[in-house]
Length: 401
Ligand code: PHB
Image (cartoon, rainbow, N blue to C red; front, side, top):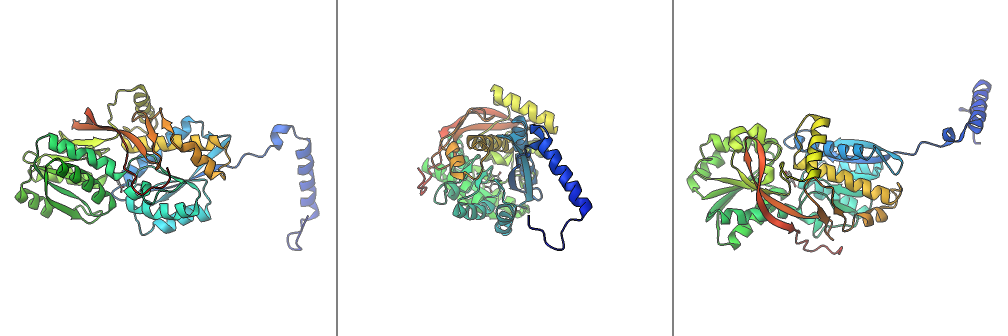
């Protein structure tokens, strides 16, 4: 044993140590076994700002899933290391390196914001480790040209959430739209996909209005929409910004004149706070509250019991993230250094137990899933039909398959 001069133990401590060593030798086997090291799950999600409620719902959904798995994975206890992303792309590289390099997490979960995701995935994809699961951010590139063997998504691509809505607006008989959203990857891609589909079906986009993220000063834009007088408005906002936009839209007197459409995020998790202003808004999304399948009913009950709130799509994405973590960790019997084998366990996986209904991991690591047409009645989402069955992102430029 190497003992430096300064730290040489005194006789009393040495004896105590010897006694402990003897006790260890004599102790029955269970006391000798070291407690297995925890599996450290690094979480980079927003807990402040406009997306705070999304970060909370994802975290709660993931924790519920892993609690149901017994808080241990292949015998290793689960430990969370949680960082507030503040939905800030500027801080994303530093936050990612803290979790990956300093804290050496076994699995990385995050984020909500597409810009944060692009920064994270480039770092984690280039390192080839750890396994990263994106529980929301939809940036198309993540599962297209930037796809990586160790990066998976449990949520959606932005394209998937906007594209079906283009057809809904056309089918509802609208000929012209204005799009309005925050100016960043999610807004541009969701609006772009819906508008492209709408135009392909003969519709016309009068104007794309862009607001800096996360601004909520909508008045001038609403006046402009009133004067442009499109048949419909196609909008993406989410979280706190969606509450404000939908309320302001109704307060400006536009709701009765120009129907509002969007990806489901426009009302998801916030329909209660939007009140009457949300009633009747039609949207497309890979989840609906009242999806009448046993796994969804059980999930919603368990979530309500655990947190005293209703589940939403973000909670579902968190829950499925927990399932993916559990499947990959048990596949390697808890040896999270085997990143390639963990990833292999998720290739093409079919999640039968998802509250959104069964979905399949595409070769580009993005869910292939059904999108529903829904509306809002008294603060709750109601399923009106299927907008797109088993919709896969085009995955252009991904060379994984
Ligand atoms: C995104 O930035 O990718 C994003 C954020 C919030 C949503 C959906 C997508 O509700």
